[in-house]
Image 1 (tube, rainbow, N blue to C red):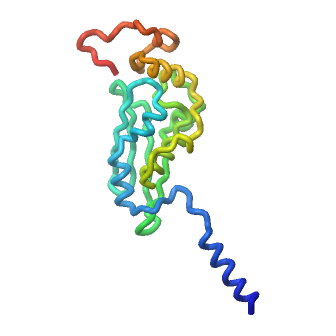
Image 2 (image 1 turned 90 degrees about the horizontal axis):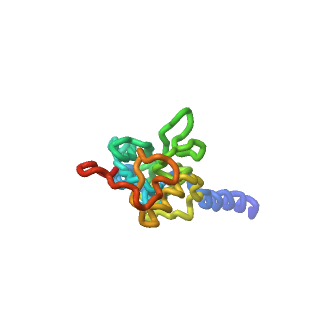
Image 3 (image 1 turned 180 degrees about the horizontal axis):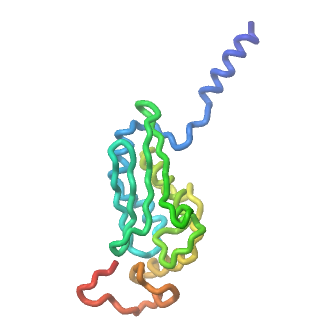
Length: 191
């Protein structure tokens, strides 16, 4: 009798201890969409931006997905999408997909960008920002691997040292770090 009760009790207890499903959040799909579509991912931008001025513009398909287009100087430099799928009425799965460049994910850490917008790899940072929004918490840079893009590190260090932001059209190299570099011509916007 005890053995039979134990055989019933153990699987029941273990079922309650099952690991949560990856990328599944305790939030209904309408609220998940609202949170993502209403965010320009400021925490992600602050944590991973490389020193060129960028804007993240969310565009959504209600209840299905949100794509963020990252724009600098009027040009789209990368985009990524969170696709939402209802698990049940109170849980939603969010899968992140990245734009593909030359058969690989953009900003995956293997592609060289002379003026990168984000420190690479980008996907883990996007996944953390999406998770933070859907879990109702702050973005946590400790949950993301440290960036490995040396050009990004140079650009960001220049910006943090008080130099003006880089643009997509700046020449690579040290010229962009010289404090006295020329300002844009009058009427020409800094991008």
